[in-house]
Image 1 (cartoon, rainbow, N blue to C red):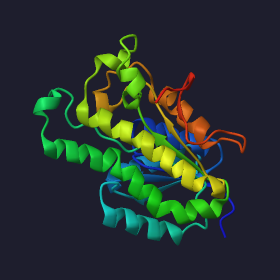
Image 2: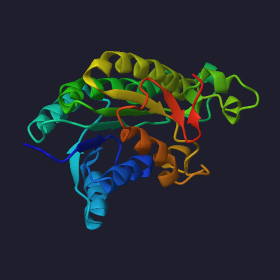
Image 3: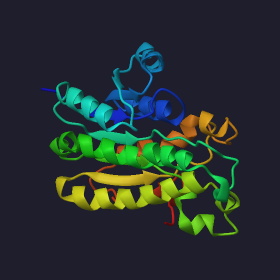
Length: 242
């Protein structure tokens, strides 16, 4: 029977996901680093293991029902309960085409990863989360997912107009609230986090924050005590407006 607390982070082979995985490992957890590409995943796992962390690879493509279900079944044979799930994997397919010209295939691809991915992963791992008794689920959202911010001329987010990415993150906020309502009786807290403008491959490393700085809020929400909030939207400075 597993005694050590267990965490799983999707898209953990680089960027914010890798930084979150390291932070949870620093907190003493066994961290299952989910990656679509086995070779990249193994390299990321080795990085943490070389630092003495308990990190392990799980192959998982969040855009595939079959692969997510297979990974969840396999993980159920490895651990008794999952204490932390961080739905971090995300993509930005097209950052230049205006909304009226955006290809439907790119919109579909974005939603498969950014929205349907967290839904299918959370659904598949729900039995393990419920067994933990006090699990935490963190959705990695964005300020671009706040209708209040993207329509506020005083906010930097209002200057960005990414139909598919923004819409997927707006919808992810609603998904977060729905899971929070369902899971609250099981002691599970579900929150969405805006990591800020982080330097990652997603934005061609044009952000102003380091991955470690961007990961800080997600790590904090993953380690919430029983008095912590659920069904909320948070950034480094506190609650974000929906």
